Amino acid sequence: MVAAVRVHKTGGPEVLSYEQIELAAPGAGQIRIKQHAIGVNYIDTYFRMGMYPAPGGLPFIVGSEGAGEVIAVGSGVTELKVGDRVAAVVAMGGYAEERIIAADRAVKLPDNISYEQAAGMMLKGMTAQYLLRRTYKVEKGNTILVHAAAGGVGVILCQWGKALGATVIGTVGSEDKGKIAKENGADHLIYYRTEDFAAKVKEITGGKLCDVVYDGIGKTTFPASLDCIRPLGTFASFGSASGQIDAFNINILQTKGSLFASRPTLNNYVAKREDLVATAKDLFDVVGSGTVKIPVNQKYKLKDAIKAHQDLEGRNTTGSTILVL
Image (cartoon, rainbow, N blue to C red; front, side, top):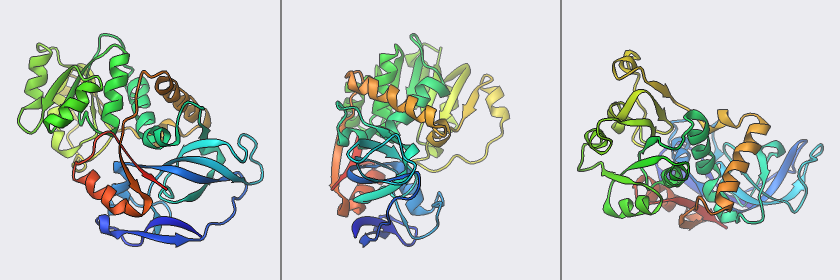
């Protein structure tokens, strides 16, 4: 028996149930991992609430991200062996002492990346990687707008964007969060609760606007985010922390300057094994070199997952949040 956090009915944080479950032996192509740290991400709340349906239906173990050691391998697994340090982002099954996953979804951890770092950065860090290197390839001289710049993905986007030579504008909700965003590479801050962020972007850029807006907020920042983008620029909407963006008239992209709009998600960018490995390697390289730091600012015990979700949804967290065993 292993401890896990399951959802038997969708709803608020209180539906997270800490309990003991049976775990089968790994099948063909699978591995069993003893987890040392587990990532907590905003997408976990979407599944818990039922905004996104869990692939296997109810009940399900919430969470996707974690890091630990391989303790058993199924038949046909050749790339990994018992004792290997690994990390993975696999839908559902994350909030547990141990889990079984497909071996081709796990990546080996370099010695200079800790379990806690890995659990705090695999989903967020690989999200930042595809956003900066593939959705819109940021280059020296670009200007980028990062919403929720003190959040888990935000602090990585700010650091990495700055390292790539971009001017980074970040939106934050408080002075404390502004300090965090500044420490992580934001050149300019906009306090979205008291300032009109679109007008402020225009002022900061002298009317030139941004090459790309990275928006994990959703409903409350749309369509104003489009007013921050130069003609032919890109709107990358990768999350819905304030609610989903409703259907909109696509002609608005033409009137705002023939903009490109994308709603990317990590699963598509790492669907192929080679893309997963390459994305993770790029992330491990920038973190291992110290170019990007992963601030794990909140740690909770697995049994305290309810509190972790309450704090996350209450906007009381910064950087990465993890569960530890």
